[in-house]
Length: 207
Image (cartoon, rainbow, N blue to C red; front, side, top):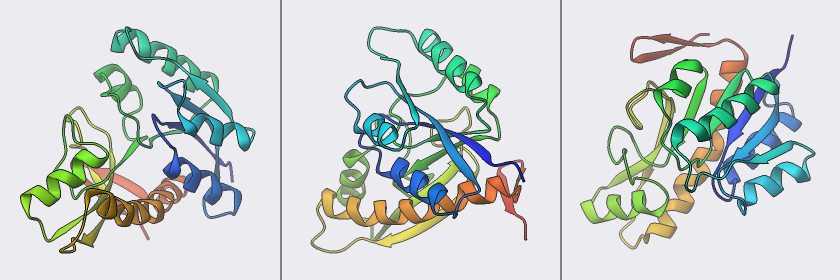
């Protein structure tokens, strides 16, 4: 069976990227990360990729229109014959051009239980601070396909995490991230196996 060719977009540390790479290397994902792209020249995700001899590219987004920026990204993904694009902490809102091009094969991870605490500005510690400020008893993470609505695409997996009385945003982030690390490789493997079927807003997981 042909192995899935995965392209990962990341703006930061790349811990989810590392989980994907490790899962590919240990056989939990029937695929390989073939290219990593960042919009930040100093993103540790780029170095993680290079450590594993994966092609890594930076297309700086500062001072560039989204359309121009995505033209470079799309050309790079196409050049690497990518089957699935994964946003792993990528802090840029995509245009309809890219979303439509990769419809049904563009996946994102979000550190909250969508549709709560999603949308513009809801990333990183901002999400966990908002959860704590609201007084939620539960938070968690969501793996979903990307649609035109920011953080509004069809949900593949969700996992709840208890919010503890003495939680700081950093403490909550650490526990949620552990669940993201478990769920994201599982979602990618199901995609690789052809076991995710989109039916409108619903994602069916086939046996």
